[in-house]
Amino acid sequence: MQAPSSAGRRWHRAVDVTCVLALIVVPALVIAQRTPASPPATASPRAAAPGQTVERIRQSRRLRLGYRPDARPFSYRDESGRPAGYTVALCEQIADAANGDAALGVVEVEWVPVTAEDRIGAVQQGEVDLLCGADTVTVSRRAAVSFSIPVFPGGLGAMVRADAPARLREALNGDTQTHRPVWRASAARVLQARAFAAVAGTTTEAWLKARISELRVIADVSLVPDYGTGIQELLSRRSDVFFGERAVLIDAARRHPSARDLVVVDRLFTWEPLAIAFSRGDEPLRLFVDRALSRIYGSGELGHLYTHWFGEPDAITLAFFRWNTLPD
Image (cartoon, rainbow, N blue to C red):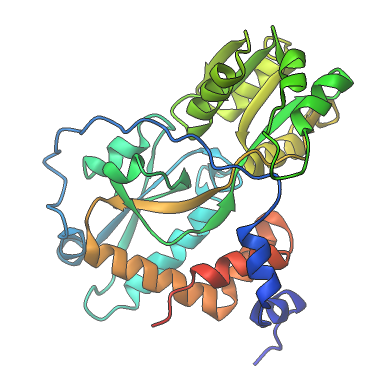
């Protein structure tokens, strides 16, 4: 058997109590304002009754996986037109677990593209069995869908142009002490009359509007359909700051042809664990997905996947996955 890599050895190494405490009290993170609950969707003829998705998969031998083509590095459409990304890879391993389940037999995977705005409805209406994107777990979303154990320690970040005023970048970076607000009153003055952008239908939209209202900032908010459009708004100077999932912003800035003109600020504004969504109240499916994810986490394979998409995980990230792994 091939010796495990250094990343794999680190993954198996026990995380001490201080790492777990660090996870709980990470400085400069605040809980995001939650998006309003989506209105109940009309049931689709394709939708399985609550708790019956596993039975439908068993009978049809088909697993429908939803993914966003525009949420790299979590889910996207690669150059060959196939789904790719960190969460896509996790869902592929869940599908492999289904194929290894004697009760399910061989399962064929069907990938279904969804958008930021229609993805929750696609789950509700039975158009997809699992949502393999970059989806934040919120209380209001749990009124519409169920979620797996967390798959990534996410949070909101901000992107600006490289020539953005120093005062604007300082205002966005703010103070690192947890007893201070994210944007202080002095910073609010710098944010006046600015133009902000966020992807429509995400937690970022609700969080940004709430912060603007709370700080009484007069600013324009542009809602864009995807991250590519948001970056274009920034580069064309139609917006001053583009807010979104920080991991997506970092990846997008690194790959963009105008990468030297883009900067993602250091601050993580919120702490938002991401997870895989599925039909609300479907406990047999939850059990299957959570068992598969827990085995992936415990095997060390998750360490290799994480390193591939985000770089080698630090102690806090390791603690996050250890904390969320369920024992058999």
